[in-house]
Image (tube, rainbow, N blue to C red; front, side, top):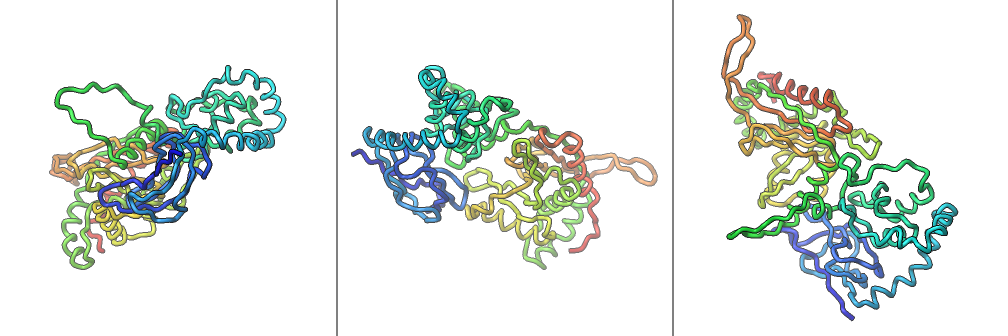
Length: 447
């Protein structure tokens, strides 16, 4: 019997182990190559382990919450043809009974009309549709049995990870099949659900010619996840970006005056990031409409203000640690947490829970010398703000004796938001509100 060992993959130079979150496949399940079999978590990111071959899962070497060293076996998969085919007859009878019980008469009537020629009309369901949506073997089996085409499958809203259609989704859809209005297929950017991690291979893929001297370097796992998340975000949310230029002269002068004393008193460097976060939090309190998520047609209003902040890792990738309940922290508390998370991001020491649960994100493109940017929303959030470099510029200011030109510290704010739920009035007013807090900074403020 051909038996393939599945090993815990290396997730980065500093990652020596990973924690098993949950199994996506059970012993006896048929598995296709590249189909995820389990979810794992490291101190950098959550991920999935794909199957290296087609076959049947014959052994699980670990359980949920187990910590497994890199290079150790986590599962065994049999690739023998007989082994792959053997579970099917055993599962077919319970599967038919389960389908019949779940969908009752309407599906029975439908099946009677298509059982003899369903395969001819529907054809084989691919494991991934043209839009990149993933369908498990069980979902494909049920769909083919019930005469559900791949186009119809794409109209079903999936509750699985990455928006995948699960068995429960399909069985729940079948009784009302034909009585509900069809949603737009997932290939439409506006109506598209969250894509699975496999979507990058299908969305935006072009044939790239090679030229003499070119070098091919495969993305590391983290870069693949980032790439897939960015593509998914653009295809999920219609992005709109509003801009404001803020005069932050008082803020810069205040920080220059107190930063040395702040470091001496508290042992923390006062950067601009916690100041920006404080202003963002204050603006969210007044305009909570940007601190939401969209689940289909349901708006989830977040009670907590959990502020994500983009930070660079040693590999050059960006990661977004999250300051939980940022609205409950003063400037000193924000400063300590910003410095701690940024420092540990640089040495790959963030915990999985510290990069999850964000409700709004700040990214500082000014650290790269950029004056502004058009950031991509960090799903499932609906807005993100980029702050540009602070530069000295001549600006017109109002004085008691009239307008004058003076050298001021100026900065651009870029606010990208999901136009399905945040309109231009809210998105534009919010970035203006943040700029107001920055411009009206109390130069005599004490810490």
